[in-house]
Length: 172
Image 1 (cartoon, helix red, strand yellow):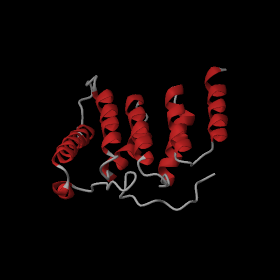
Image 2 (cartoon, rainbow, N blue to C red):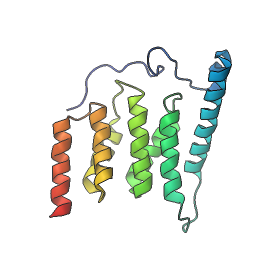
Image 3 (tube, rainbow, N blue to C red):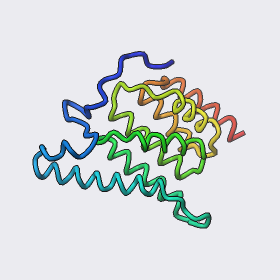
Image 4 (cartoon, rainbow, N blue to C red):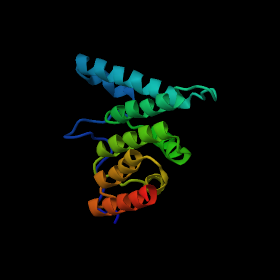
């Protein structure tokens, strides 16, 4: 069951705090708030750079770096529109490397929570269901389903039913 309510404007975080598409608007803010936003912007840029970086095949920390970068972007997504990070999360869900997928799931949950009422795009909806069905990790399956529950894309009962199916597949 998909949500059919109209989406709220994507330019607000909550209660009229504007989401900043770029740093041009930061000049008009209180100095302490401006400094905080600039720091978050630097962390956002760093996390995006980590996701763009092509690690060597034997880089043992690559998966953790990518997963943690998505977690940073989840927080930054509360202040900034991050279409590039959303595209990277789409790609990560298809690759099925566990740490990266878990980070992408955390990012997507934070991203859509900050945009209350925004529908999850069909390709991400499908990818999250696929991850929930095919992963060997119960926490990853639960996280993927939780994104869909938290956004109103599926009901709690549907998520529990899918998790029961997952348990049947992996524990019998």
